[in-house]
Length: 137
Image (cartoon, rainbow, N blue to C red):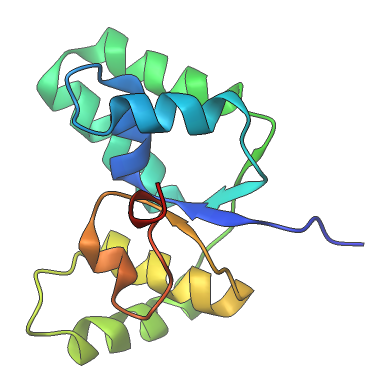
């Protein structure tokens, strides 16, 4: 039987959890203290790693990836070329927005898995109607 996933987690939530200066740090610190089953994509992992590498240094970027590896409740789903076309379609559908490929792939994964909650501070992740956790707390 497949593991039930409760929410999608985006780069912005992971950064908010790690960065004490982030406006949403306390919320995500509380949420990650007792998390549900979460899913993310390799693009989120890459985006977060790059953020810590640019903002801080290699050590902090490696600490970020080590943190993700230590999260048993977080599943990084396999994505591939079959997921690019739906993501590209979402980029075109929301061409009036500054939507990244990472965001579009996240929207696709949420739709594909029927997720009804998104851990993100980025309003773009709510474009298809999945509620953002920041609006619920």
